[in-house]
Structure formats: structure tokens, C-alpha cells
Length: 78
Picture (spheres, helix red, strand yellow):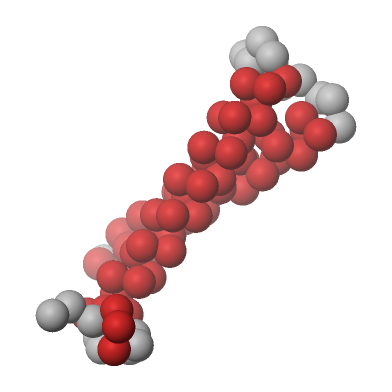
């Protein structure tokens, strides 16, 4: 059960990051999504989704590797 919960914790930010990429790509091609009034705002929301999702997944993996001592010595806790 713990593994399923951990997988869900990683999948949801992953989907947000993917949706952020889609919003940024649509802005590049001039496709405005329904609830967002401006293209620049769409790009900004997509960038926030992408960086937030990517940062969460990267932090989760980094925290797990740090607990298992699989990081370089400069990243270990002192």
C-alpha cells in the first residue's frame, strides 16, 4: 500500500509538469486555452506547473537517495 501511495504522490506532479509543457507549447503556436484570457498568462501558468512538478519529483528522488546514502559526499548531511 505504501508503494501505491508513493507512486500516486509522484504521478500527480508528473501530470502537472506535462500539462505545463502542453500549455507552453500551445502558447508558442498561438492556441489559447479556454479559461485563460491571455497567451502570456498561459505561458506563465505552464512554466509554474512545469517547474513545480519537476522540482517536486526531483526533490523526492533526491531525498530518497540521500536517505540511502547514494549521493556524492558533498550532498550528504553533516
